[in-house]
Image (cartoon, rainbow, N blue to C red; front, side, top):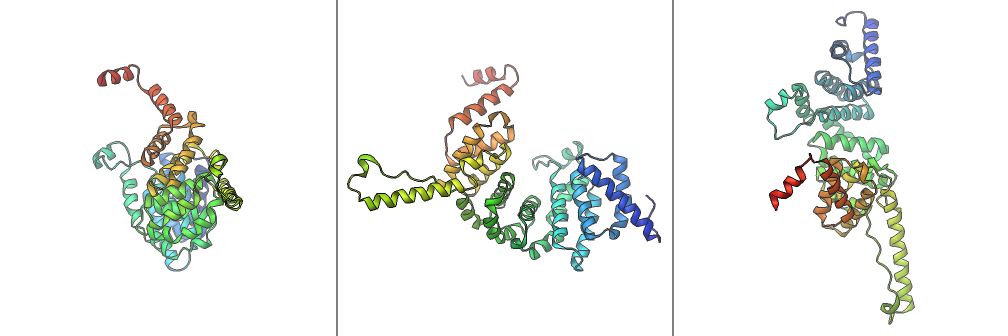
Amino acid sequence: AAPPGADGAADAQVAQSALAAVLAFARARQAPPAKFAEWLGLACAPRLESFSGRELALLARSLALCAPGEASLLAAVHASALRRAEAGGLGQLEMLDVCWALALAASSEPLRTSRSAAAIVDSGVPVASLMLRGFVRKSSLMAMLARTADPADCTRAQLVDTIWAFKTSAHPSAPALLERALPAVHAAAAAMAPHELACVLYAYAAVGVPGAVGLFRSLAPQPPTSPTRGRAARGRTSAELQAEAEAYAQQAAALAAAPTSEFALARFRPIALSHIAVAFAVADPDSPETRALVGRVADAAAAQLGALNVHDASGLVWALAKVGVPHAQLLAGVAERAARMLPAGAEAAGSGAHG
């Protein structure tokens, strides 16, 4: 791409061509060739001011999906978005889209803190991507969004994206923002899709929002206590038995309507089941609501045993152990699948070592 010049129309055409191309790669979830990525930086970075706010947000989201390693260009997009936001020229939705994209791009390269920086570089992870993580944690744009966003005005999808972005970026403003979003989450939770609910609850558990315990318990009501029957009912008045039966019916109805009921959890994919079990086990491990919830999640996961991957299974097993809920069917199924994954002879060798 030629350097930007006096011909504004030509610059705008180059910028629009670059945006159309990166959108195509993002829709296809396909990484662009290295030469294209190099051209993209030359075409876009000097011409970002020619993009509208919506186009800038689209560019950021597209880069995060297909070229998350383009940290220099993402940082330039962030700088342009911040200038516009400070001047009042960038809307809340565009700010959220840019912040979401930065969080996604920063999380897309798996970083293990136990590995040395030299080992990470040798493994092929771009140094620029590692730098993006620290950059996002200090993002002034995210700080501004945290101050100005009103969770009550967000759509359900925007609320989920906001919570996910701040949790994933580990931004210092995340705890206060998630605390402020609690009423909106309470109101929207029943309408959330399974993956949205699991994402939000996992974020609250990971960030450690103190006021979130009430949210978790409201989404996982305890199973009702069966009303007194037979000999145990002797000596009870009919009014007492009637009140007990009505209370049971109300509790059963509340559980059936909850987004974590047995019937609702049957629609959850394994990754959502794992996330929701871990979230409850972290946020509220000692409550009877959590123990009942994790038991229901284990029932749902046991019915999808063949679809569990290693990460989902390990999360579920950890949650069962954390809250002290035995589930023989799920544990036996996970153990059997794990044994099949061992190299030939490894199981026998392991047994002999302990024998």
